[in-house]
Amino acid sequence: MITAVSLECGYAASSIRERIYASDAGYGILLYTGSPGSEGTLGGLVQVGNQLEEHLNVALELGKLCSNDPVCAQHQPDNVQEERFLHGSACHGCLLIAETSCERRNEFLDRALVVATVEGLGAEFFPDQVLV
Image (tube, rainbow, N blue to C red; front, side, top):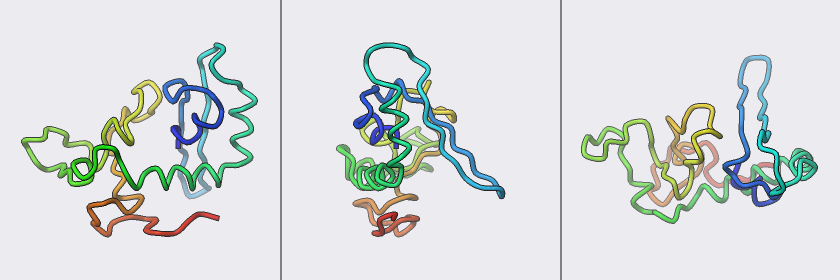
């Protein structure tokens, strides 16, 4: 989502921070920037909120393929030789972002749980559907 938003608003992905809220009361995503400068506009980041569904669709589409596939999608977190126990189908080519931007330090990320990847595990939440 941060990558999709950064392409639209002008801020670099490393400048955008995120917080995800999920509880019984509801759900929410907060995207913000804490870095002043001339690389993007706060108005552009605010405008992204008006088109959030479109950016979610772009983010889901971007998550289906990684430049490191099929190696990225075939990752097995329990493989001792890989030494990446906290990541599923996630690498710097697709999901990992600047650690200062990620509240959970890029841990427990796996795009195969969100969208269908080339590995075809069948574990995804959004197999082929587009959010409306």
